[in-house]
Image 1 (spheres, chains in turn orange, blue):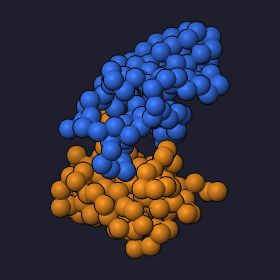
Image 2 (cartoon, chains in turn green, red):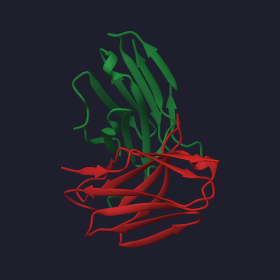
Image 3 (tube, one colour):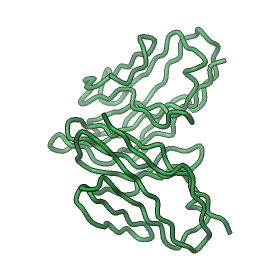
Image 4 (cartoon, rainbow over the protein chains, first blue to last red):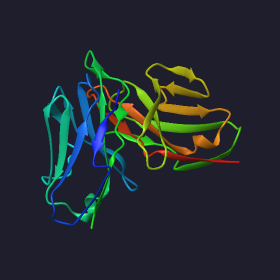
Length: 116
Length: 110
């Protein structure tokens, strides 16, 4: 099992540029989560999917952020245009739900985004 | 709304025992989780409590009191590699996602 795979590991971009973060969940997991972690705000949920369908995107900061899950093995988080305050570590996590409940997440290694 | 509180930092000595507390106020409750996160790495799952009482897993134990909105993580025989942040997370009834606390940064000194 390769775990949750995220790419890139590090991204440095200029303000105003588009940034796309990628995630491959563990095969067979039916929930996928995108989190953002900063020193000031800790770990915050941005959006999560169940069976490729977005369930709760209330944590998405604003319209500049969008997430897609076109199939069970791939998801993207896009920021357009990026701003310095978007600098953070973005984690993708997946889990397997039984009877509508999920247990522990498995996190990817994260993408460290720096917007200059 | 949901609120989860943990101490910001703790320090302990190698070989000792340390208890990290977590208090929560949530609109629903369906499980509490503890995660360990080393600097620059992803959080990893440590323990899960949904009923009151103590769950033991080797050197780590986790306790839950639902009536008090309280949990703690107990680490025994501390090792230097236990230096990390410890995150408490609560799953509410209505959703599948967890709300994470701010984390406690534990430093283990020789």
